[in-house]
View (cartoon, helix red, strand yellow):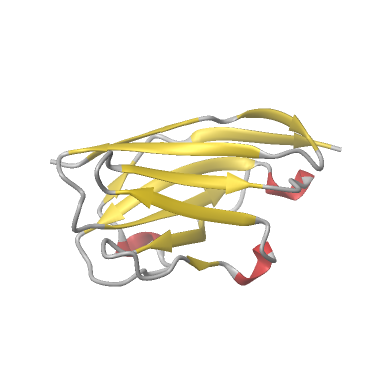
Length: 123
């Protein structure tokens, strides 16, 4: 059974940086992992992901290079580095994992989810 736990969320000012981490248990070495986010009243959307063999990362087009994803298979950790944060980046950020070969962008493509961590960006 895979379990995911996000950490690192918080409240920041526009232009700041923030790093989120996702700690995985249950051997996710061969799992594709991804970040999603969900703003209040909106659907959960893809931020970026990386396959178990390092293929990628793939990012949502709207991020314009501000976000960077990396993973450490030895530590079973997925990291999301967020730079130049904007108020519209405010959302709950979720870590997801799935036993699939390549990154998918739909929430229903992932079987395992963390509980999420809140990121609030003030102008």
